[in-house]
Amino acid sequence: MSNTTAQARQQYAGFKADHVGSFLRPQRIKQARLDLAAGKISQAELTQIENEEIIQLVEQQKQNGVHAITDGELRRAWWHFDFMEHLVGVEGFDEAEGYKFKGIETKPHQVRVIGKIDFADTHPHLQHFKFLKDVVGDDTEHVAKMTIPSPNMFLHRKIRCSNEFYANNLQAYAEDLGRAYQKAVRAFYEAGCRYLQLDDVYWAFLVSQQRQDEEQQFGETTQSLAEACVTTLNLALQDKPEDLVIGMHICRGNFASTWIYEGGYDGIEDYIFKHLHNIDRYFLEYDNERSGGFAPLAKLKGSNAEVVLGLITSKVEQLEDKKEIVARIREAAQYLPLEQLALSPQCGFSSTEEGNHVAYEAQWEKLRLINEIVAEVWSAAPQASSKTSFVVEC
Image 1: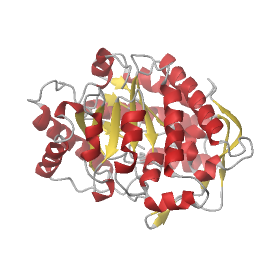
Image 2: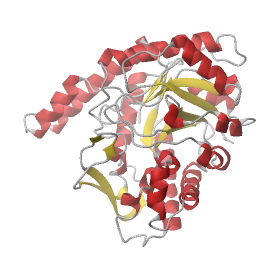
Image 3: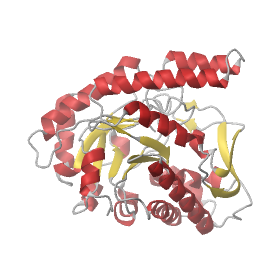
Image 4: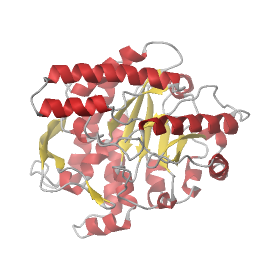
C-alpha cells in the first residue's frame, strides 16, 4: 500500500494516459555533442542548446495534451548511467564491451562502486529538475515529472561485484543503496518534485530464465536478489512525503528498437505487488508476448495502486490497431478494475541518446493514439479523471 494521499494522486497523476519519460533527441543536440567532443563548443554552450531544446519539448508536450511533463532526458547519454555515476562512491568508466541486446551491442560504458554509496545535494540532476519545473510552470493542468534509475540497477552483478568495499555483503549493500536513495527522494521533493518515477530493468532481469541461471552459477538465487530489491526500495521510500507520487517502470530493455530480457511477471508478482510499499503507479511493459499475461495484476486488487499498461510499443513506427488495444485493456480489467488501470507506451522512445528506429513525428502520433484510446475506454468509467497525459522513457 502507499501512503500517498488521494488528493496528491489526483492532483499530480490523475490521468489515464501517461508516458515513461524519454523522447528522441533533436538533431541539434546530437550535433552539439559531437561539436563538444571535437572542441568546437564549450560545455556552457552545449547546456544552453539543451535548455532551448527542452523548452521547445515542454511546449510540444503541452500542445499534444501531455500533463506529466518530462525533459525527455535530453541531457542524458544513458537513461541510467548519467544519474548513477554522480552518486557518492560511484564512478563511470568505459569497459571492453557494451551490453548485448538482441542483435546489437551498446557503447562500452559502465559504472563501478569505489566506496560507500551515498547521495549528495550537489547531484546535477537536481538542477536539471529545477530547470524543468521552472519551464513547466505552476498551472494546475501540468506537472513536472522526474525520471531516475531505480537503486536496484546497482544490483546487476557487474556493478555490485565491482569493488571490495562491501566484501560481497549483499545486505549492507542493499541497505546503503536504500539510504542513499532515501536522501535522493527527499532532495527531489525539496526541489519541488511531486511526481517521481523509478525506472527498474532489474526486475525484468530476475524474470529472465537465462539470467537466473547465470546468477545461480555464482551462488545467488532469484529469491535472495528479489529480497535485496525489496529491502532497497522500501528503505528508499519509507519516509516518502504523503504528497509525493511514486511511479515504478519495469522494462525488458530498450535500445535502438531492440530488447534484452523476456519473461512474465509471475515469478516476481508477490515481491513487486505485495512486498513493496509506497508505489503508486506501476508502468508495466505489455506490448508483446515476452511480457507474459495479465493474471499477476490481480495481486493489486484492493490496493490504492494503479497499473499503467504499456500496450503501445515505442520500438516501431507502425501504429497499433485501436480495437486490439481496447480489447487488451478489457482483458486486463478482468484481473484489476478499470479504475486502477491506465495506458502508456511500453517504454521511452530514446532510452539512450541513439534513440529507437522511429521518425521524430512517430512518437507524437503514438501519444495521440493513446489519448484517443483513453477517451474511448475511460470516458464513461467510474472515477475516471478528465485529465489525460502521455508517458515516455527508460
